[in-house]
Amino acid sequence: MKFNDTIENINSKRTALRAIICDVDGVLTNGQIAYTDTGKQVHHYHALDGYGFIHLVQRGFLITIVSGRDNPSAIIRGNELGVTEVHTAITSKITLMKQLSQKYQIPLKNWGAIGDDINDLECFQASGLSFTVPQAHPKALEAANIITSRHGGAGAFREISDWILGL
Image (cartoon, rainbow, N blue to C red; front, side, top):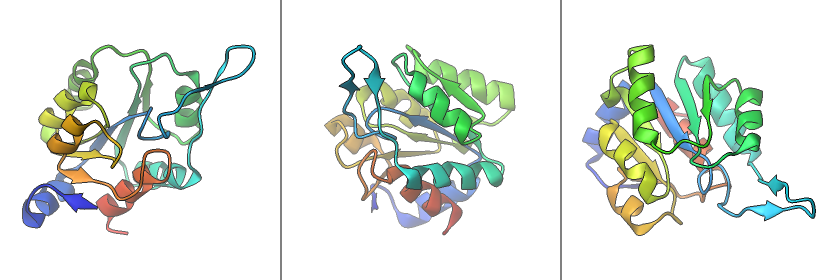
């Protein structure tokens, strides 16, 4: 992991986290979208990331998976892992994050935001801690508090969850 802030500041924010909002394409997947001959989309998710979700859910974290695209596989994957909130075809991730913050009474400063593109930047700015992956858009790399060593779709979420939980 690469830290874009002091370790003391980041560690104090880490202990305050109670909720995570996580993008799909480019974070939970490698960002590539394949199509079958019948036009169905195919996404690949990493098994390591799955256990990261399970560990956070078991420890009482509110987990939200969000995609700007209509993404049935994200809904299936989120349900498999016991994720509380899965939302696809979302045009404003920050609006969703604020709504969930109110619904669950978790202040935005207690949220972690994971994303890789410019449509994630508002969540980065509003959250207590922001994370991105090495292949992210340059603006996301600049804005994130933490950049993972692992790439999207290759265990980046697990790297984040293990770090949050001190594993």
